[in-house]
Length: 74
Picture 1: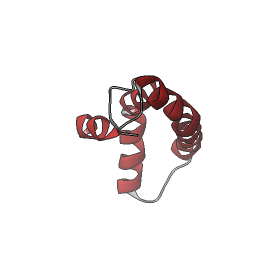
Picture 2: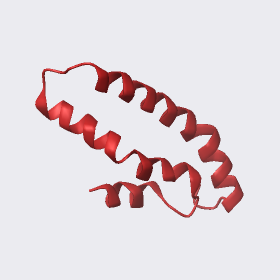
Picture 3: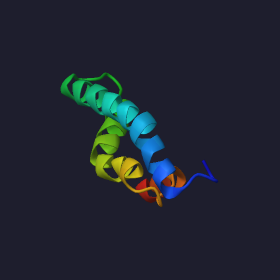
């Protein structure tokens, strides 16, 4: 993908990443509704949910590499 054009990167993210993120969001929503025994898992799920907007930007902005998104979430 390093040599891909801006449009190619955008299309690839829309086709490949968006469905994966949609499935993850659906799973996350279900997981947050049910109590979990692990406090650390609950904390991780809550964190992911709270950072969802930043994570989903990856599919919307081709100039924003995934590494940059993850780094900003920390």
